[in-house]
Length: 551
Image (cartoon, rainbow, N blue to C red; front, side, top):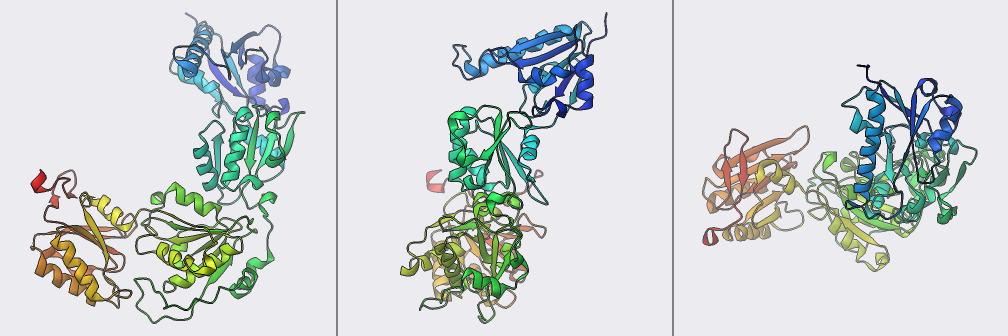
């Protein structure tokens, strides 16, 4: 029996035959069998690129797609028709390989990058030796055609198929830095609309047939959708270098904060209302300070708005894609210094950091920026609507001076959700949420609400239990618990969930030690039904879905 042949998936690059690698050219010339895909018209771009390296006497196998954009009466629809085609094509090549003939299967670009070769590889690589010869991708070819660095430094590249759903495209375009969108043709109009909705249309370039004599480079906004072929793509280089994003190194990056605030416009004079403070401060309110930094580049400005976002409890993977997208499209980031340190600003974004005692002023500053055309993200941890910045922004936005400024709030994973999930499901039935800081409401109100929750047999979460200078409330809280609930009542103590300092404790009220609580701690007090189950597979706390009278 003859030794089976070897399958080679050979990448040809974006179109210029001179961009075919030396190894690819050698294998193409030496192969007894050269295969390539083509549409029903019979022409193959892959073969035309490889033509200088073909020789007489080679067997050529033309793998003709049964359809491209046409409809089909195949019982499995388009997917079924293509699956049958790939199976039949694989068996055709398997015949040559079994007979001992090496097969070079040509692929535009790279064989494993949106290429039909991968369908052959998955069907043949477990039966025959297979080798991949990488090629220059169309994304690299388009970047070279633009002459603009695609990504630099810590920028990331997102590659999308134009065939994706519109909403998925918008989400990725908003959250991405540098972008490449492939598979255009009939999808170009949808891609252009998604770029516009995501606020990135002005940054986008169109590249057609990169590296060939028919190469075409234009701004996306100037392209006629009817003229777009399949072999084209949209490229949005990272903002550090993209001239359409106004990426020019600014000498102002070395200016001090006060100079930059003059350029931006000073924060407005706070309205005549009592000064609002967040729930956590213990020091006297000092001078309102806004520290502004400007990353390399100048933000593009469109219609201004404020988006209040929650980063989640700490881990970056608990920040929602919706929030990530809002942060990416923002021209200005406003927030408490500690929370802003969790972010890496994009080139061109201004960062306005304040201390943790000026929520109303921070909100007014953000609204003023938006009124001047900025896209502002006001940053909170956890969920912005739970003892965070959403209420402060809404209160200030209700003032007549700001009623014309669009405001939206994007939810985040709250501390209560994070702690509950880390131990099981203690919030699985009715529950309440309290802050026991008395900086914005009197202790008498806090005590009244805690008594009501216990009387109603609710699970409840406790935010802001104590700080280094505010310990009276947590001691008073413990006294209430000792008086109102049995000593065996479940109490969960979570700190820095998901972070390097994570500490979770499944306790009872009798075991609770207030001295172990600080501002990064959240407590969950169970109802009469909440249980802790000690298990070899890991302890769980949960509150049953049903109540005794309805079990």
